[in-house]
Amino acid sequence: MGYKTIIEEDIDILVAGAGLGGTGAAFEARFWGQDKKIVIAEKANIDRSGAVAQGLYAINCYMGTRFGENNPEDHVRYARIDLMGMVREDLAFDMARHVDSTVHQFEDWGLPIMRNTKTGAYLREGRWQIMIHGESYKPIVAEAAKKSADKVFNRICVTHLLMDESKENRVAGAVGFNVRTGNYHVFKSKTVICGAGGASNIFKPRSVGEGAGRVWYAPWSSGSAYGLMIEAGAKMTQMENRIVLARFKDGYGPVGAYFLHLKTYTQNCLGEEYESNWWPQLTEMVGKEYLDIEASHLTHRPIPTCLRNHALINEVNAGRGPIHMVTMEAFQDPHLEEIGWHNFLGMTVGQAVLWAATDVDPKYENPELTTSEPYVMGSHATGCGAWCSGPEDVSPPEYFWGYNRMTTIEGLFGAGDAVGGTPHAFSSGSFTEGRLAAKAACKYIDDGKGEGIVVSDAQIQRRKEEIYKPLETYKVYSNEVVAGSVNPNFINPRQGLDRLQKLMDEYCGGFGVNYMTNEKLLQIGLKKMAIFGEDLDKIAASDIHELLRAWELKHRFLTSESVFQHTLFRKETRWPGYYYRGDAMKLDDENWHVLTVSRRDPKTGEYTMEKAPLYHLVGDMEDKDLAKLKAEGHH
Ligand code: AMP
Image 1 (cartoon, rainbow, N blue to C red):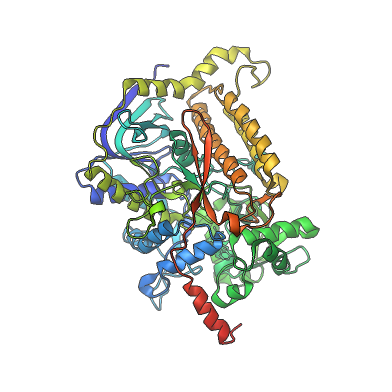
Image 2 (cartoon, rainbow, N blue to C red):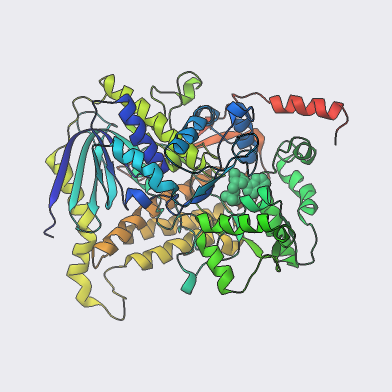
């Protein structure tokens, strides 16, 4: 195809994907590896890439330990209850104990964090969330990573990991192509820290036509964190744990600042509070341990995110939609009104534009809320990702194999959405995870674990042919088009994406079926996925831009297949409001109080599934406090 091959060799640490996780990795790698060669490969431009590219109005994970606010253990308990028990507590604790120092660094680097003028403490939105002026959050943080790395390659779509040919199951770098020049890039590296993103747009989105592309998570998050690692044979965990968001309708504007800071609340179309009507039915499904309303009131322990969704979904199904966010009261206060608008201008400007365009003034009209299509990611209220080693001082043997945040592939580490079982890390926690992964990667190299790696020219050439095949397919068959973009010999990336989204929606529990699936549907879906996989070999790209879309689709496909397999494996409804297994509608702690772990054999494409123990490493201290409060007769 005439594209140049550009080889970057002798890399110690390759950061593949530089959102918040990847930037944290590059920054910390320089601290522990003064002498090391650190290289970043990023699909967009590091200054505006990843989920934080558009800015944020809050940092949702900050303990405030130095202000006496929370301890890391408190955060583990919070994440545990929010995720219906399913958290890798070693990883969650490790992140929480280091996250405050990350936030303090961000402030040193110039990120404006709002402060309480009397106490000097950061201004809180909620128990874990602090407020920032964060439109330029990503460029500020990227600066630190750029200063730390030897080289930053922007506009590189990383398509595959390279594997060592002298030792099985050891990573050797990565390959990809430049989305502007088309050139083929090879990165030979002792370690790779995968900081690529989670997955938007694998389930059919609610936004269509003129709104297409408007999604909750970043539209460019193509599941590459999972696609890259699954293809290489890394074990994954909790991939069934897709997340559904309650959001302002059509603009996907976030609700956290509204609920927590503005103290807005929801009601049905009759103007009634409806959530509590659903708690008895939900308690039947999930048990009192996960939905203790009394405890929620006493300790301000939030009701799990998925269960709040369940109430919303069912109220609408009962014919009492739409659900409204009551903003009209809070917006009478000019200060809160300003915050309400700022909140969107700092991170979801589209919602403000949409309200302006459709004549919705939240001061005089309560806007509609709805539930989104599902997303697969690992840093908001969900924990999809790779099965990684935890830290040596906290992790039990089943969770520990030498290096913190290392996947089951030697030398391959993860951060942010890439690491499984670590929900509620958000931006600051993802950066912190990158730091932890980089520190461990430096030790791995210093221990001599990355020596003697062999990457043959044959491997490099094989990947090159594979990467550019869609361009070749187009060249060979484009004359055989029968109408518009219909061609008997190939599909284009848009057609493939539509097919994937329909499949995921109808068989894997998207919004179109009210998040419902069952064993039979999943099996049919997997059969269709297998045929779709064959057709993906014949995907065609008319130019480099379509080549990018083709590879994003392949990563989305691998992610989706994994979600199917995990959803089939877990025979219970663990997160009502995220998805339902119609043939197992109850939470089943007896059989499923476990983490799910999968591996796709890179040679055969076959999946093996296993259950991994779920250890509660942090005690229920809060529950003891709760017992005390109850005994004292508080309500
Ligand atoms: P969001 O704006 O929905 O992304 O949420 C921002 C933060 O607020 C996250 O930490 C959420 O878990 C939290 N959050 C959002 N809504 C609520 C709620 N109703 N109760 C408790 N926490 C919430």
